[in-house]
Length: 605
Image (cartoon, rainbow, N blue to C red):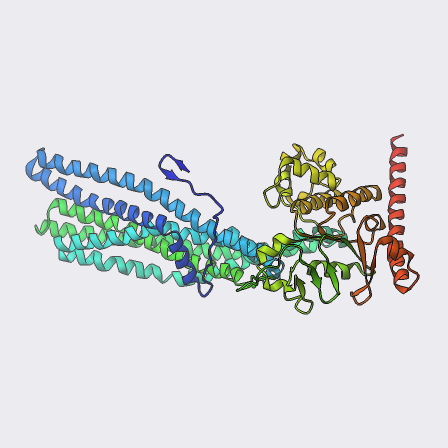
């Protein structure tokens, strides 16, 4: 897509690449090579703009000499025309240089943000075992942007270095003494400024770590705010956050003090050098060693070279910050995923393969809608989540096979499309409701509405202004717990996987709604492999088969809901105990609901 003559690239990038994780230098070099096209344009534009700027003092000096010797003649107008041409080049090259500098910043910053986001989404809970949440957030919010700053400065810095070399060569050819003053004075100024860089780097590293701790503390406090209020701990955590905020402020002041000294010296030292050149140049002009125009040229170059020095100092600071930030980014990228992709994945079994959990003995046969019941709900939930291969380390001793092939040996993307596990705690993201439902981006409006009806979530369309086109806030907090659960169920159904595992999909709804959902889900998934983890008889009665787990989380008995209820052995008693307890809880919930409704009606009267 083009807007004028500027190319607009789609974001996020379709391919985040495979970055090297050995060192910050290799990571930064890898990113530079990935955006080498725009980086090269920025370098060329930066060099042209700086060389045109460097030509200005020379052209002014020649114009002065021609004017003093020839008066208002054609030579004077020729040099003035050359100055006008240099000015035009500066403007045009500067415009392109700025555009490509910004694009460099955007490409690098968003590439690293996308890499961190990609790793966080793929690593799952493994990333929070290795790093605080704040470190991951800071890697996106701060570190990726600082890396981008280095790339945005590359064109101007390169142009400044080349302009310095050209200017020194010109000045040495015109007057050796003044040329040497500038040739040696500029590196000396840079060296003095460089002495402050190492302590500045140390203070910036300390500030970055303090900021990461503050972000982690804030994220933990917000996520546990409801619990903190319940135990009266808000004041204590607010005090901790305040103390850490002051620590960040203190470290920021330490950085700012040294940064202000460095910024002041960037102006002072080149200014002193310019004054020295002017004094030496004036003496040389009085002795007749240089012309008046050359004096102006030398003074102009003394002032001009302060610019490359400033750029070099800024570039050095940006490189240091980029190295610090890239180390933090590498910490995230080096986290081993909970379910890493197999290096040489095995061939996927054909459609209709059995999914078997060896530890429990549970086998999901193709086309069956199965229920899983256990006296310990956590045990049955663990069995169900194993079927989706969500944590290799935790499930190392409980292998699961699809068509005889270990899940860990299969291509993960293929597995995620064939087997979908919808966990008991639903997670919704902010955005358009229809897009949040259509996780795979292929459903029509009719499909979305049908899934909402199946999940008995049509009331959500009234709760969200705009219906399917309406916006859900973060975590779907505008919805009730039952509504969030039903939206998550509709989302799971819309993925239409070969094997669908639903963990407690109706735990947050009343009995009447649960009965409707159970009937509709069983009908929609009839003939497709489905496992429902629940102890609700309203759901179990609609399933093809029910499997009961014993106290060791292994299969103890199976049959239809009615058959298991009718059994007169120990397994039947265990099943009736679990299901009966669930029925009692449902009756209690219904009674409480009725009582609440009666109280509300009385209050209204």
